[in-house]
Length: 577
Image (spheres, rainbow, N blue to C red):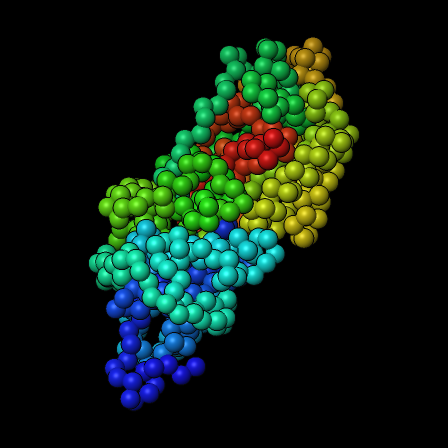
């Protein structure tokens, strides 16, 4: 399209403001972008663009939004000058030439953006997220439409109205292509005021910035775990009223009940023997982000995103996704561009950014160029017939399949994971109950299931199929030794706590290497899942006596390139309610 600036009789070239944003509910996960072109003089909305992108990362979505916004501006006037305003410091600094572009997915997008207008006609500036609501709303509308299996439609968009701008004179575009135009002028003063350029934080001279990183800005604290009055066997399961109930066994979903699980939950090997990742006090140890590891920390309310550390306190639903900017920008030496999306004040956002920056810069955090972590979503299998009977059920017993209740649990967790859209691969223990659970989830997600022997449950030897009380009655000395030392084996040559821990640690290392930067569902059992969590926290073996793990529960641990780990979720059963 030829714009007014192409005609020599039309006077000086126009100036546009392009505001762009992108989001990914999972990073990578279901993603979309939004972009708006404004008249720099009046603040009038001239064009909008939005598109659902499928599964990509947050940074790729932001770059796609930038390209779409620049293309929409060029269609209006190819001779215009453009001022790009974005809340992603990563994109702004990279496109300004001050930061290097390392990630292979973003290099071609950056080059594409640079070709839309001739060099020198486009400038970039950072704005707080609170000032980028229009583009943000468009991105969320596109993602919402994609979740419904639809394309974003400009006719149903309320982004212009919801952010205080009129739709008069707007040209709406879907996927960057013009869809139509209108006439009219904007009457509100809010849009004109938004074209003022806020001062961006000054970047360091030679920052090294990760392409993608997800770091909890403000970790929340999980509920204090229940601690039995006296050490009891982690192998069997029992009610809380039973003093012989196994603290390591799975609990039922009812508060105060210790265990409807069939798997045992013994402590694993000591941390120094199994190579627990990361130093004490390292990357986000002990941080819990509600559903952040599974559904991310980005949520929507009425189509408007809530982003940043404040949003991570509650569980995130299917419309959630992490924003890597806080970690990226704070680690690079400048304040993060925003925190809680519900804030209407730049000052409040800046205050939250300072807190996030202090968290990221605290001792134990690694360098800022480690990339996205390998995230393990840990799913305990559904119930088996042995679960309500509270019996030891390891890898050396009858290998039961799921019960009807267990299959229903697996269907519920499959539906929940499908809504979140973050899982990229599935790996399961070789036992029947885990393979069946994994198969139900895989069918819903359209993925294959890989089998990993290291995820199997502990072998409980002669105790397989027995209750804790029966083991105490028949093998009291062996049971006492087993409870006292991680090197003791169950009666009949079962697997010791130390052996289980070493096996799980080796499995962890193999899977982290194989799935670096990806989100993987590991379908396993009580002991291995607790061991993943214990090693990530650097906790002693006896800590497993203080954990509950319900059937079909979700936990999550992220592993970074520096060897650090972050526990992001533990024993979540909200999908079963």
